[in-house]
Image 1 (cartoon, rainbow, N blue to C red):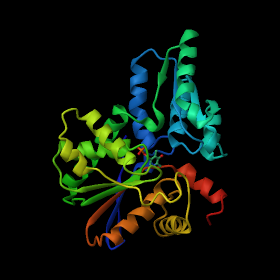
Image 2: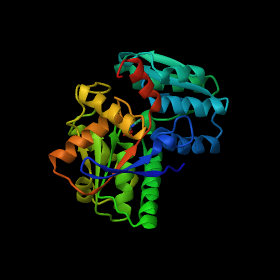
Image 3: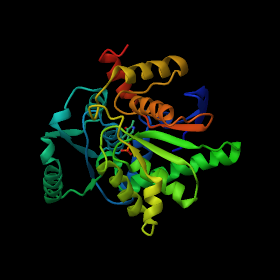
Length: 305
Ligand SMILES: *Cc1c(COP(=O)(O)O)cnc(C)c1O
């Protein structure tokens, strides 16, 4: 699953490029499409007959998993926390794909996953569990692949990116990009803008994921390569400010690119603040648009215009 890199021009006082993961041609694309493709390659190799995963009503991951399962006529079970149970387009899609959505309280999520997996097995099923957000080595591997695409673009054009920015959630996307960087000994900044988690835990999870993927990674190198910024999460997951909304409108109007308040719009705003704060100028900046277009429509319904 490849995506294009687009040059958008001089923006935020830098040369601004965007990798359009949102245009990956499956179910509105995004980083979940890139990760889930690899998870389903595992599923297709085994004799699994149903899929279990976890995510909120905002989850792009759950939409893509439900779509890929439905395409195979496999049952799909989604454990979803009640705290974040609102009506969204992603949720409508989950229903369209006839996923079984099981709403539980947040503290019961991992327990309910175990209960469900055991129950399915007892009934003679062979379920495949996909961690929330496509976390784990398979998801990390997907973003090592994305990093390779970026390198390929650099080889072809002679353009070298000084910074790579993106919205960081479970940290798997970031871990993959960092593994790619470490594998090729590159010198550039990979900056994850946290959309929910705070430090130190948020950053530690990225570091753990990198070490899980590159078993003999140099600990100091991994730490030095992991920039996870938590100062732009605002009030937490899916919280919004007028500055974020202004950024989303600006990018939509000027470039015709949809972003959203939970992930990509928040990350773009965080990136713009960071560039200003650090006085970064005249560098080559790559923003990875990690997808989530259905969330843009939720934002429209919620009156961002
Ligand atoms: C899930 C998601 C992210 C975060 O990706 P992680 O690999 O979990 O860090 C970022 N952007 C969008 C649009 C997402 O759906």
